Amino acid sequence: MQKKRHLLITGGAGFIGSHVVRLFVNKYPDYEIINLDKLTYAGNLANLKDIESRPNYRFEKCDICDFDAVCNIFRKYDIDGVIHLAAESHVDRSIKDPFTFAKTNVLGTLSMLQAAKTYWNNDWEGKLFYHISTDEVYGALEFDGSMFTEQTKYNPHSPYSASKASSDHFVRAFHDTYGMPTIVTNCSNNYGPYQFPEKLIPLFINNIRHHKPLPVYGKGENVRDWLFVEDHAKAIDTIFHNGKIAETYNIGGFNEWKNIDLIKVIIKTVDKLLGNPEGTSLDLITYVTDRSGHDLRYAIDATKLKNELGWEPSLQFEEGIEKTVQWYLDNQEWLDNITSGEYEKYYDEMYNQR
Ligand code: NAD
Ligand code: TYD
Image: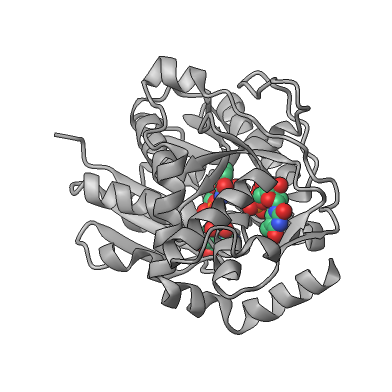
């Protein structure tokens, strides 16, 4: 039997966090899982409807920047493990509003670390602060077959990646300075159910359905590595339980796609599942002004995780993308609830600026 844990998951109402919460609540009925989330525009408790009344699940609405409130939650639940996902996560928003990213991602992470340090009071036995980060901290690659490894030097370009890089440094500094047991993982682009539809894949599925333009930045030649979100959650579970303290693990899908090729797969899949003739929605592709500082290529080498902890992606991309498209088509109400109102105004403004 697993030892009882009191696990604080931050950002659990967001995209990846909700999958992590669901996996832990289902897999570890003896753990107490506390989901701490501020419920920003990206946080949505509807993502957790299926597990919200489970006896091992609690929700606390809280801002990670509010140090006293976070300390109270550590005390209230006698927290011994943290999986920290709460963050501002969208590059385009970070270009418009870098301060919010510095505040949440840097100062918010520092507040979490300081609260853990205060509550744990140098008794590190059985404790873990596990920080979830991104491959974007490594910067951009050329089209030369190279990949990011755990040794790649940080070279962030966007305010988002700069803020995540800074938060990673703070986590490692808390290990090196105070001896806090920490782990950092850097993952590639996730896709799957419950992703906020400002990100490429859900945005394009929704736009195709509503016959709206598909804004392709630049020439669509940028490359990203895509991982199904449930595989990321499984990697987080593996690393939380078996990872080595003070280590960094890269997590990726070994699945690189040029944006325009990926977009054509999305179009083909949506058209097929909607019963449209192949090619129907191709003319929605609209080339727009490129994102400033748009990183050319990300590619993650997850060999260390595979060799040391035995994790590898379980889902083939074709299967993952079909599952994902089907999920968004089946969950139009979920999409409508978040794409109406404020978000619709924000999106139209962003789109019209391009
Ligand atoms: P998301 O934007 O969908 O969710 C973020 C969650 O954090 C939301 O529920 C939001 O309400 C919460 N949050 C934001 N600010 C907060 C605050 N001040 N206090 C408390 N809660 C707050 O993000 P996501 O895509 O699920 O990403 C989760 C984490 O994984 C982030 O740290 C991100 O950097 C990292 N990551 C994401 C990807 C990806 O492809 N989405 C890839 C690698 C790493
Ligand atoms: P995104 O989902 O925002 O993730 P990230 O910027 O963190 O990689 O974007 C994925 C890729 O798709 C990225 O190269 C930018 C591009 N993109 C578009 O071409 N059009 C869009 O409307 C969006 C949101 C992204």
